[in-house]
Length: 187
Image (cartoon, rainbow, N blue to C red; front, side, top):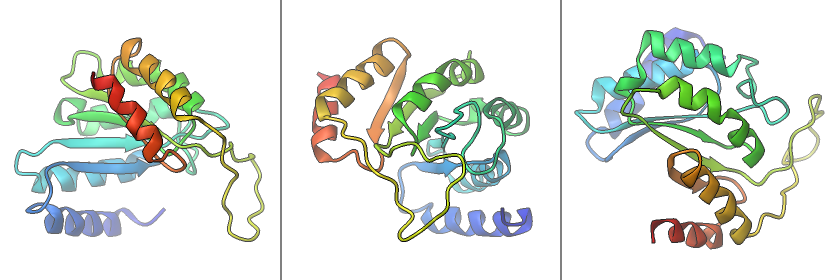
């Protein structure tokens, strides 16, 4: 992880340069509470009242943890609430991880935003889970699962109807045909 002092400067520069040209700020694919906090603070400082969303990524082999950094999801969510507050965030999302990981994290996500005016959302990927110990060879890309647009819509309906997700999309391997099916959730 890069030093916090570099994060502060980098996220501030990004947020400042985007502020006049964006409708929302999304701190996306965040995998540690330290980077989440610095991205959220920078976005908040430059948002000018625009919505700010936080999107985290989970470890597909153990979705109680954030990917890459080994921090527990609960620890990260607690730190965000304590040091920033979910009442200042318009949406808490999960992206770039499996459908199963997102679904298993729902209770912790819902608890984190309980009583807050904060939307829940997800955009899963279609990668096969990465083995715990991976030797990167070649491109380092993982195999894709075959998730039909209809199957992704079915899962998404569950996220929407049963779990209260109001923001749903797709990440790696979820393509235009999947998004076209997701549009049916609005009808």
